[in-house]
Length: 112
Image 1 (tube, one colour):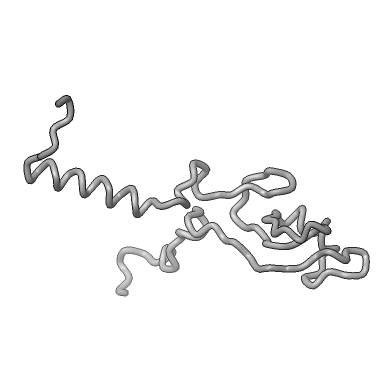
Image 2 (cartoon, rainbow, N blue to C red; image 1 turned 135 degrees about the horizontal axis):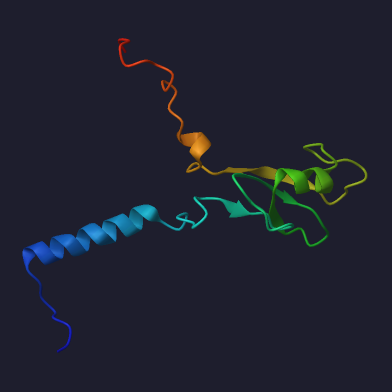
């Protein structure tokens, strides 16, 4: 009986609020501010390219620097990179760059 099975309305509301916040944070609530690491060099970045780079045909998430090496700098690859296949982009929507407001340059005395 260390833990009480029933709670007051206030206690239940607080518990639901905490659970809702945790759900909103979701699996993408990463400690580096939403950045993910490159599968090849382990650098944390805000933009990754999904691609296949070798005979295993496994999808990798690679940063821009590594992408140039594995693709030859061409989206569809070339003859020197026969296993390369482009699979899209992942962008960190929580980055500081993405949060900039488009009307940030507007002065307070200007009408909207």
